[in-house]
Image 1: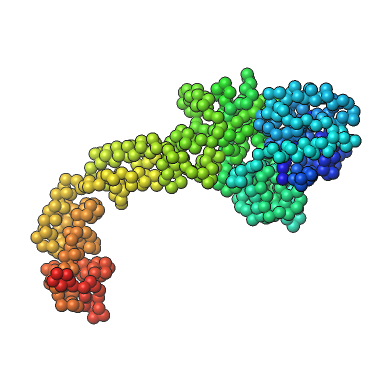
Image 2: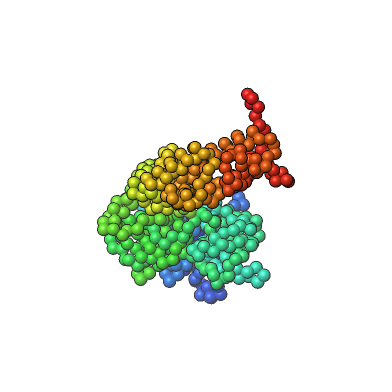
Length: 598
């Protein structure tokens, strides 16, 4: 299916032309038919001679309904611009052309109507003069009379050539449907219609209603009033939705693929038609949306737009600004950055204008990651900077969902090393640098990235004590001296673990003992009992010399220790699978005793 919008001055025969092409009535309201003037959007369709289907979005031509006109034209890739032979080019025709040019609509057909009332040549010459230097310059021209049928066949042929020249939408493009109608159907519930400008929608799909972020499900799907399983852009579709009430959705909102878009309220843009003066209060039109906004001039042709209502916007999109007071189109805009930095410092506006002067609106993942330093891949996808199935730039370091510029990664790594050493110097008795403190001091935005930075540095280690240099002792002088005394005592009598009171006399508190265990200087058998790291292996060696199985008393004597130490030590060996208890309470080793030469 191909979707084409009409455009042109009121009463130049747009709706009559659509009727002649389709045999359908595009005006939906009785008032429109009574007054003979289109007020809101109308829809009709026809099959061309090669069976390609063309759907028309018929828009109002009166100045009072420009917002409705823009809602219909916004998501559509091609236009049928209508000029009456007996009236020629009019002001509203020019405003419609300005809107089409601002939205970068490049495909269309110029139709001169009412040729039964006047010679079309003057109107053709006039229109061609107006089209020069616009995005629609050079489009094909057809003269017709909807009243007599003259030229209708030629127009259908021209439409065939038009749709054949339209670029095919990308198969993997992110899904976005701009809503232009909302209503209810008994037994069906909430129904929305719109032009699917990109992506694909299928029955049963989960979508997101923007800007609210409400998840909805496609309960049913129609295209041109026929039930379909799926539709791909560009297409006119009607969706029945589950998960949203009719009063919770309105024209100008959008249904998007999950994770493919994000609603933003501030964008930096290039003005397509820079104005000498730019009023601060404007309305921005994008898709079927029209949103009040504040405009802040940055450079000669760049500005920052702050929207009253967030919209799902991708980099490189075209929108337009309209002055609601003067009722005129001010400028088209190209989205240069849908996620711009704050302008809080003196001179930041000038610096930002210089940055924007170098941007084209084309998605450049490497440049965007470099500018940001780091970004989540999912965020870049939602902003249209990186394709969902695109490879990250070679210049980026990939860590989970994060893409980090290589220079930023090196700066983080250097900063982390400095922070670790500074912490050790300023906190000699403390454990290592906490991960949260490392994030604050280095500016790393995610704790998982700190972990990856530590892994990438062979001199650092992250454990329960925090981040520290490998081999660095966290024991201060007094505690270090006490541990050495204990180590000497245990070296003389391997299993003579001191009592808790003796440990305190040595100056070994629970914290000091925990540090010694963390550094591998001691092992904790149970509360208050600490031995040298090789004590378990030595105990196993000694009990191997006993007749198996052995009693607790035999084991205790073999170790030369007390029951206070022997009981928890053998229980620890049981837990490690080195020994096991028999039903009679005796134990045996679980590993075979090696013989000579074993």
